[in-house]
Length: 452
Image (tube, rainbow, N blue to C red; front, side):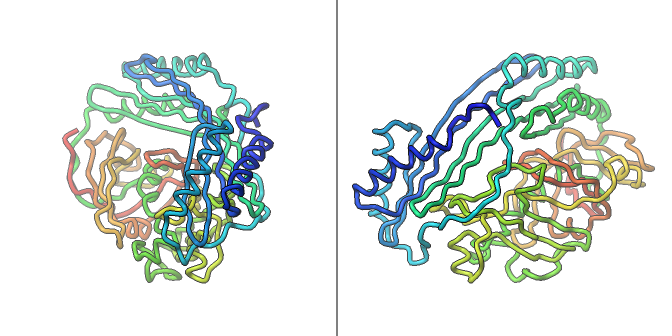
């Protein structure tokens, strides 16, 4: 953990003490506060040159009051005494203007939660010179392949705390490092990205090597015919596509009938080889071990051997459904309710190279983008491949392919998985990372070839 956290536990308690003192003076005794701070720095490069280096420090206080079944929230990014009193006044004033919510639960009671140490000194202490040196080495590796590099290297540290007048106090410091690189050749490109709480776990030079190799091997791409193929989705592509379905594993989504799991709980929906958990304690995961109301996160057995087993419940969704809260609620009030945020898909014992070697005819996909939903109940998604799409013949990569557009049901995809690699922490277009394997999938539906 960094030697001097951005926001200490003692400072959080001090701020909340001022919140409660002023709230009680205004006639409000049920109050919740989110308190946070962050410091982030980013080095951005393009055309084989660093062109941007930025750093930012932020702090915030978000106050929610409950008054006679009404609730509302107000926020500020200033933590001085006057600003604290002002945001409390705003929260109370907005709360009194709301209509009562008969389903609103009282504030959460304190429960024991298990800390997840995810703050690393080495990440917090990375300097602009350190990032520049790392980026320069990565650029040289791409330049040596007569390619052009672009990407980012960022490091950050943050603190998130939730406190309420019932005695809840959750406190979570965390650091994060992200390295992403695209290598561009005249008619092809390669990409890779990784993230970790400990910057020392990243290997930017290896990532640059992978991106350059993908760009070289996908040069002079062929135009493949649309159709259904055996496809190997690398972990980032799995995250990009399969990650689209997890907001549906929600009690609120089921109650609103906007989940593809409506009438499917307890049923076998995917293949026998698919098991998925939400596990904040997994060593490759990140994030706090409590939710937006300070409820401890529980490990959820979302899918077991293809059968839908468990879903996430906020306190309000659990109350309405007769279930137990799982610690996956978003800050109240909100429209989404809850969702699992620490996805772990159980993998196999193979490597991506093994999956390729076992494929007579197929396509390897590095990542996907521009993904949109076509059919919410079958979870049919459309999108495109990007930055490394390859033809596999006789168990080896033989050519690069122009990018495809796909129309693919996630339900069907997870019913057609033939083999999996070991699971790894993957980073992609999604806003949160997941622990997932590469998947070898039959009958993946490519609908057209793109121009590039």
